[in-house]
Picture: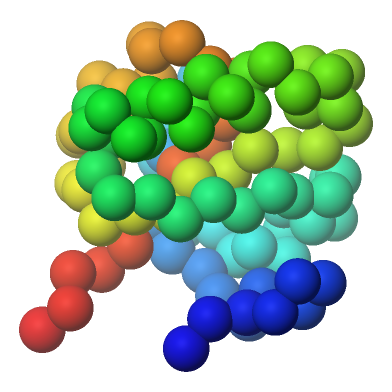
Length: 101
């Protein structure tokens, strides 16, 4: 089940790797209090589609102007998110989503 264009994301919190490398349990609402959020769900760090997506975000003028926070959500470990933070793309935080059981 997906979201329709214009729908808001459901409220959630989880482990978030921040651009400075800190990891904190953070609610999406806390990020929204700072600025609008573009929440991107993607497959896995370092995959070709992921790299292309983050490079495309980097090239959007609105995102480059720091008007919108780019926040990722995927299932890789916090460690892998930290490794991916050095890759091209906008400075961004990444949620580590729990793996389905």
